[in-house]
Image (cartoon, rainbow, N blue to C red):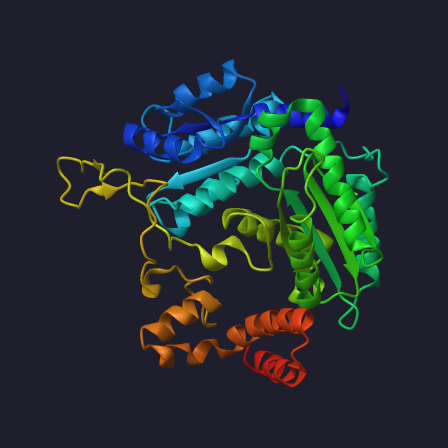
Length: 418
């Protein structure tokens, strides 16, 4: 069995461990994730530790903070202090009802990887789980694909070299690509056939990219990286969308139509170094996966989700403590997607102490316009214009609409008001 296949086997054998003292919440999260993952549960940190110590197949840990015996903070610290790298290096997603900076800061200080606030958001939880199960188990640094793709180490080295040559007039774009629903495909195909599917994926991407890419590498079992020197965000997004569209038209040898998700980032967006560019592309890949795959994204998951899709679990309520008078907590059902929450309930994307207005995505702006609240968009004209530039550049590239003048005017507005 090849090294690549071995990694795929380890990844897709991985389970999700959910640690929470509420049986209802454990049930809700299990129901959310069981379509894509095997889920183990534990009622507190001590019980969770026993599961980790006994099993070697946990790939992602999801934990609450307020729990008896061993709370979330102490549990995370114990995991990070483990001498077993299999436990110590686990991605840890914290879920809690405490939406305050102190809780987040302390959780991250203990070693949390990500943070999700209750009420739980199905798309965000699924995206985080899928993404961390994927990103945390790449191929070895030096392994080169048999089809001649760059190894992960070589790809990153080439990226650093391109970064050193980039500037404001010649930016560097990165596309991160993943095959959608890898876990389901792996269950269907098995080791050897899945490797053939991934070779098919690489071949189609290479053929579609042609000479546009400066570097193309295989970064993980089902993850590929593309570097495009000189590409701004708009053209890079157009390339990514073209890849996703064209890939879907190339069925596998057995006739199955597959899809990919693509995250896009450009150095012109203010990142400090190549590592920052890579992290930005990863966040955007998460969003593409969270929205169902078969798409390209040049915006982060938090730009459009952030609690907008709240779901209900068969009207099950968690009773309040006897001394509390708060309303019962409502949980979620994957099959039910109600309307978007009011925009006023969306969390600000900047620190509350900042004097700069929080960012406003196009989806939120359209919501406010539909509600007759267009006057509230005045402080956000700059960020909205910047988003529109990306969208119009993409449309102009695909349809040749002659929008260069409008794009230039919007770019000037964005630069003048951000």
